Image 1 (tube, one colour):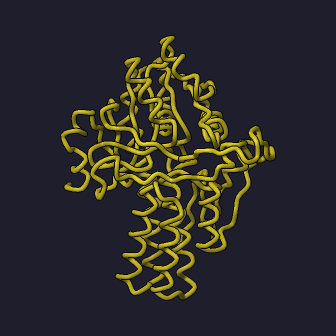
Image 2 (cartoon, one colour):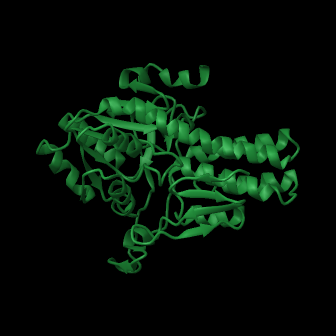
Image 3 (cartoon, one colour):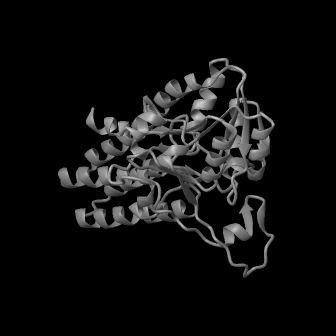
Length: 344
């Protein structure tokens, strides 16, 4: 397999390396992935995260492992375990299904399996650039933009989805300012998005999640851009918990609200948001926080908690959606235009 490199993932001389996102922003530690089972552990621990990125990472781990002479039945078994490691992000399922298909069709030819994994990597890079070029036109010079969670190069192997669009607008010379939701309970905005914006030189202000409404009331937010982990065919979409709150606030304050995702995030088997599974995570994530700085608990050790990783936002609250190289207005989405991505 040829060498591959992004800010969050590398393949160097046949070794798959993952940037440990639990150690950011202060420590950049690279994990050598030993096996697909090790990758499952890394995914579940959120050391690697972001719907597009985990699909690419899982595919590469399978491809490198297949060179050891594994059987097709063994390949399918491990692939299914990878596929189930994060239940909401459909990019992972799509990527694994493509890997299983090529393994089956090629009778476990390692080169063809590796070529498919590299194709999935390079496709994500290309899709990120397409989204940035299309979506950047929605940003005006002087805009103040609010974003939620992390959707940049730490969530993809390209420049990112929503955050890639934002940093691309900055590189074209547009003077923008970004408000970054901290993104409770795992602080992906505070730990990861700020880290990426620092590196890109984009002006930003970190805020607590519950400050966004007051900023909108003061007229300080011009637009909201964020990502998606699964998009239903009617335009409903799942994204990091707190997205629905922002959508409702934007509707009330008249702030344009956009989601940005590659077409690999569309689930053609899901007609609307009611069919999107929502991952429930450990209660400890709500009781406190952990990272390179250590572990801190701020609630009673046995405090009952509710911890869905995602929520579902109905299409009626969207202004529009950037999907790959296409922009869809709310009217387009409600008219079924997402089918275009499968009919071209």
